[in-house]
Image (cartoon, rainbow, N blue to C red; front, side):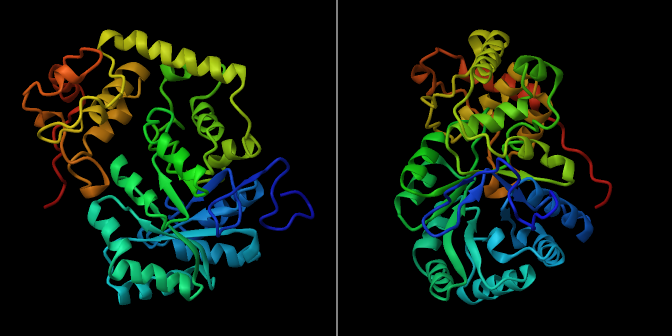
Length: 386
């Protein structure tokens, strides 16, 4: 911060975007707090750097271990005015009313605040999670939090299906949502646009990490994006779509460099950015050839629930963009993350051929799924204990 600035004073050029009907406007980037957990001093350094580059939206959760306590301590040490920051925390779905009330009060105590600007349902991933928020104890919990003035508005984060997210948005019960919106996975952009048009805030979940580990891109991806960095293009792609804010989980002040550089980057894509994105797409198409999945999702539904487009997207990333390490990591997480990620990998394909006539590109989908599996699967690693 420059001399005379107070904590939370936006850096020159920092802008704010609306984030729902009952929340102050937020910075283009949101500080996600799940990576600065080694020590309170780490959170202090990251928060100080975030405020200095114009970030005012802070996102945390009890599920992030000591994040809330570390963040509350850092806010106190920096003497950040409450009005200078927008604070979002989250509670997991399915809690009994009394336990949810206890957890929310504990959140406030750890953060050292009397009120959250935003409370999200953390992982509205299944139909029963939405049911919990609309009826019974979940609905009572959210209504109580709003009625007591403990939160400004409620929303949700989701790793669920497009249909589930669409159903949640259609209820009119939420002021904001956090969605997986990425340069290399733009399928939820229509949902984001609908939410924005309805006046909701939209937070993009981890476009750097979950978007392809773009903070450490492979050489071919760097070449394909010239003269821009892949992460710069990923961020600008989403900001140009009007997304309210992009989550950035920083472990060190240096991780905030792009947030500082792009603090005022709200305009449409420039000619150089557009050309780079077109070149990126062209190079991937050349590498993948006639076996490239266009992600139209016409192959669905699969009779045995294989998530065909999502699996072939990982193949596209590995072979088309050089993101093999990322694709392999995501593929081998399938079936090991509960409702937070897919449960069936490509080996579940029964080669029934049901999808074949629906593919507008005539892809040999069962063969591509088998190729994806052989290319990305790793043998389970033996644990060092147990």
